[in-house]
Amino acid sequence: MTTTESPNGRRLTTRGAKTRARIVTAAAELMYVKGVGSTTLDDVIAASGVSKSQLYHHFAGKDALVRAVVEHFGAHVIQRERDALGHVSTMAGLRRWRDALVQNNALRHGAYGCALGSLASEVSDHDEIARRALSELFAEWQGLLVGVLRRLQDSGALPPEASVDQLATGLMGALQGGYMLAQTARDVAPMATSIDMALAHIESLSSS
Amino acid sequence: MTTTESPNGRRLTTRGAKTRARIVTAAAELMYVKGVGSTTLDDVIAASGVSKSQLYHHFAGKDALVRAVVEHFGAHVIQRERDALGHVSTMAGLRRWRDALVQNNALRHGAYGCALGSLASEVSDHDEIARRALSELFAEWQGLLVGVLRRLQDSGALPPEASVDQLATGLMGALQGGYMLAQTARDVAPMATSIDMALAHIESLSSS
DNA sequence: CATGACTTGGACTACATAGTCCATTTCGTG
DNA sequence: CACGAAATGGACTATGTAGTCCAAGTCATG
Image (cartoon, rainbow over all chains, first blue to last red; front, top):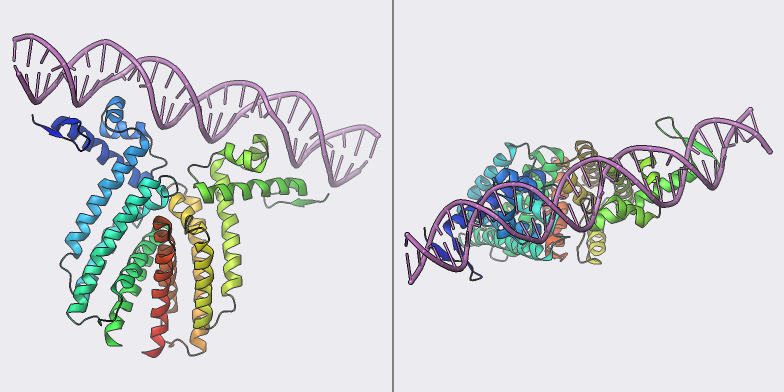
């Protein structure tokens, strides 16, 4: 078994890394489904099958675990969105992206919302560090949208004077608001409608 | 002192009603600022200056109190929005409505989000009854927006074929998403941008 | 003004949960 | 193989929180 240097200089065996990963994935799943507040450390222990001392060995406390979960979801979502948006350069591609998000959410009747959005609204009042991390993740996500819009602009599908930053912000807002309405209504329809309106607006700019 | 009949047939003196109201307003304030999860009943007792037995006399438990808070905020928000939107019949009026919401939120650097939205994302996983109440409140709010859009339609500012229901959903999504982004970024700018995009889209429909 | 129901105060209990501690096991390294 | 550091197991403590209980006070009503 090899050992690797962790960022803070502590040694960490692959076994330890595996344990840490098991804790984070179990915690992430629970916090996504039940919410951060009603996920207890005992829940995490039971779900991951590790002992309490392992958890406290790897994390200073619940806040540290929550921050690790934020990073975990952040990496996952950004990766997913990078794959989904990285090479999109047409309105049709953007609509396929919309379809994928909506259909993925429809599987659960919109019950759980966006992983990052749910974390954000639950955590940002309470943990300044986590709030900032989430804020940067949203910015990164939005940056991917900016990339798409720029490519649209390059291909002439969007006029050069359009403010891609503002459009990306609006699209992000529609997406997150849609998730939230869907979660409350237990129905994906408002999410679809909300994103559609943003996309329709972006598309309408080309013909004006 | 007069007594009134409460809905469930129990007698309730005006003194009792006053106590109940004090509990709800204190709980609402705390839950808005700190979140539902991290507001304890002891917090509510301390803030409202009532005793524990009073709280349990008026409410079956924390869930019941949360539901009362939902109703409280619901009545407040719907009242505010009815005043703000009830007679709006122009795009300019809609923009003034936007300005009021944004400016009101700017006072707190967007720290707390929408009262109903924050409650919704925290409660809807946990309490089905509260979730439904919030869902209906959103529908009512959206109904007010539908009213405005219909008046816009009547005055010719919006074409008859426009789907006011979908536009209202999109506007609601942009609003809620904007609140959320603002809350996470501690900056109202994304909220303003998000709503602006929705309004721009609505306005653009008239000239197409 | 007497009565009983409504209202109030606050101590008390039961329990869940965060966090601590130390003995034991596993594993990399010389 | 021997040693020490990392990793692990699980019991234990402290504390915060929801919820209970009963005695005392207040008020509408006859």
